[in-house]
Length: 493
Image (cartoon, rainbow, N blue to C red; front, side):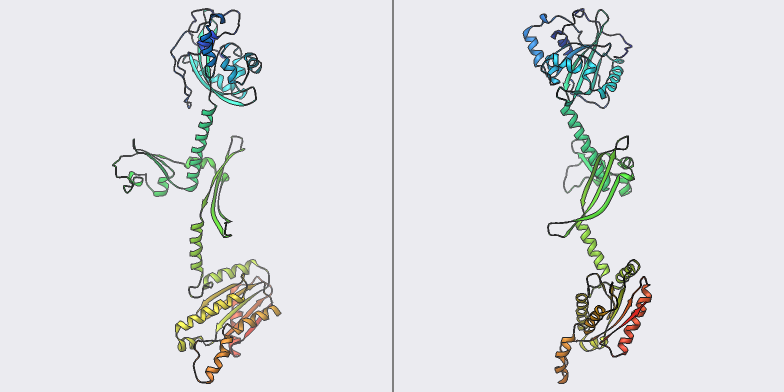
């Protein structure tokens, strides 16, 4: 199998000459010297003292000893170093480990060699590792996969002890134990740790884990990048929760190499929403990375959905507060101009800009007071919002001046009906009722002013807002000059 460059222990008795399997060789395999462990592995290896390997015929094995070997967990066997490692002795546990009914089935499955035991994909690594270990010692430890009789792939821990018989033949005495559960647990732990590191890196959070008995503190995340300094004990020990004095030994784990390994092309980070149980949007932040193998193929997709609904609601409230007029709830001047200019630049449909002004609003404030004036403005704002469509931009530009932008609304009967409705205003019914009070010389309880409207319809946008607004404002002036309480429309293009 491999070439050896050291002298090995001599057996005290000659090996069997007939090549018949016996439990005596397996018994010797049950007591290998303490194995050397490869870096990165920590098997639950049995401890045994050094002993010379002995051979004897199966007849020399007592029933009690044979029963002990049969019940031993795992498998024991001996194989010759030369060639593919032909196996001459084995315990029945080895056949059971491979899911075989007997030795004959095992030999048919593996070819009766050590090489036939090892998964083909692991053979080169296993043989190299054994070679390196026995160059330093006569014992070795390796972990590899096997293929059972039913095709299942399982992991095994292999402890071997190398001896040389009196005739110069070199043998490996091996104990084989099923390590599948340990491998799966180790892999699950590795994946969990990797998942934690990725999620921590994605969230830009800092995690810490403190062992109170030792004072060991493990900090994960870019603490220095976030806080501008190295972590200190006061950052993690909150005396409101723990009054016991302690001294921490802090170890920081920088996750930036992980993010560099992930690379920009595999990182996805955006905010979106999905309808909740009540139909309202539930906002969340989608973050994920794709891990690739050496050939560039995707291996794992790790990420998280971070609930941002509360933050989104706060942002929406702040945005609404910044965009809305505090008195009427309509868009304020800045927000309205931003939206109108965007629509004018992106929508090629005809559109209409409507300027609305309260007639004699100064008289309302002088006669009824500013509280009544505010009530008039709020009622007019509600009226304008009710008449116009949801897609229209309805805004208070300041004082008693309002502005409406209606994309897709062209000159014609529909536009005339909208303007007529707006010109009547919200107080038309009240003004008719107030005529009796005015006839008797009494002041009505509430103000009911009329409104004047000037509209500009652009048939072929895009058109600069300043030009469209100048036409609408000029048309409003004409409406007021003509007697107020009416509308006028100017068509452009």
